[in-house]
Image (cartoon, rainbow, N blue to C red):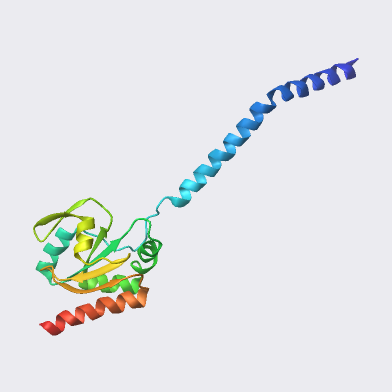
Length: 179
């Protein structure tokens, strides 16, 4: 008799599960999508980059450069640009690049497609207008200027650590030769 009660209980349990089957499948799919979404968003969330330069606003950089005779390094980037991200992640934080930046430059980041207003040489303009004024032709675009707004050198495209370091040193030498 007990054996039949157990079989009846098990049969009722599995019967109740078949009624709940759509609910179980829906819950499983929802759980899978939630886990997938979490890891997807975590993967695209920007991480803080160790040893990244301390980027400043252009007005601040020009004021500081007038005081300490450093040059201004301007990185004009675009949010979706893979080479811009690579320079930001791999090139600027590199120890040799940071040594040159810290010694000779005030680093500035400009979003070449942004409507954010900046003040350059007393004139208000969007970051996009500033990029156009600098002669932007492709992203990334790197400009080196003095505290008076005179462009010393500019380069378009990705530069690896040795290329960027050489570019910055050459710009510093050009200025030293003028003096």
